[in-house]
Amino acid sequence: MPSIVLTGLGRAHEGTLQEALGGPPRKFFVLAQRIVWGITQSDLIKVDVPRQCRSLVRLYPDTPASHLLDAYRLRAEEHPGADEALAKARALASGGHPLEFLVPSDAEWAGEVPEQKLVGVVPDRVWRVSAYEPMRGCSLPSQSTSTIIRTEAGELVIINPLPYRPAVRMEIDALGPVVALAIQGKAHSRHVETSAASFPGAKVFGSRGHLTHPPAAHLRFDGILAGERPALPDEIEEILVDGSELEEVLLLHRPSGLLVVQDIIAASLSTQGRTFLGRLYYFAFGLFDRIGCLAYMPMMWSDLPRFQEGIRSVLGSGYTDVVGAHWGNALVTPQQVQEFTEVLRWLAKLGGMTHKGLLVRYFAAQPTFMRDLFRYKLATRRV
Image 1 (cartoon, rainbow, N blue to C red):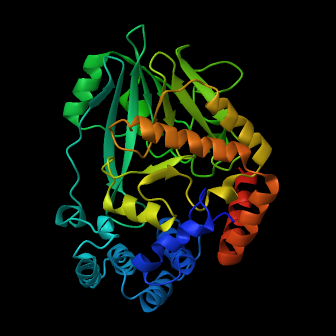
Image 2: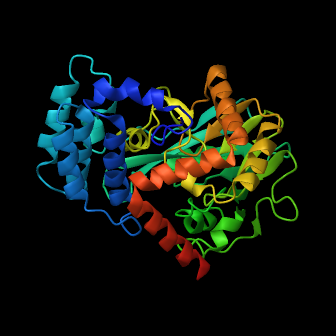
């Protein structure tokens, strides 16, 4: 039977975490998800976060993950007890605990971030650069990454534009003129206006989802990706994957075979340099050291046949490499590209009854999430 906490895997995989968590994995992840979304989506997900943290620590006192989630909650509240909760997590993780990778370094806990760098991933054609900003609800940083493509004409297309430090901005300007800013899906809208002002010569392209997403509905675009006609240069293919609340447009750089994903497929890999909050968030939703779908994704697939049609288009696109908006600067390995492909194949073959079964079991475990999803859908209809 499919797992509701490790999406794409079977329930047998949950058992491999029993010892590391010190109890049943499913109950742990139910509580962890309430805590994480209660902090990051407090306007939508109505959760008594302190109460959930107390329950988690009481039920799972011997795993560092419980105390890390409590430390995260206390840090979000700017509570002085955050350091004490972190110290408990560190003590439990010492000696090679399997969840030691979740524990933040002193620099991470202090909010320090790596130096911003422009990294070439396809010689003279494609670059990646990450930016670090506070995750919603807490001052600790999360990571987002731009992909910059130089076309055959020598012009630049920036996918997922972000704030760039002066030195990096000078490097970008030296690569060529920026003619297009592409925002693949509605969940990324924070930097649309500032990026448009920063690159006044560039046209700005969003997705159809931006037009009905309340936080993004005020934005103005020069065109829509994967619309009636291509928005970007011919060498960048626009692949619409809708039938999902996270409707987005995947972009394939045909000359290099590099596919750029936003949120529908996620990666939490040890080679990608994810921040502490990124590691903790993805762990709470069942993703660690693999490529896959976060646990809440099945409730986002509102029209499964249509969603799968888009997934099959991606499978047939001819990509040979893949990067994501929240992955690190570096490319993944060939084995990880194959893992990404297997995730797409699983999605393309997912049966309607299996999907409905996942939803029934997930909402039974997280009943308030159904109410909050319904509230969100009502809000989008009013835009």
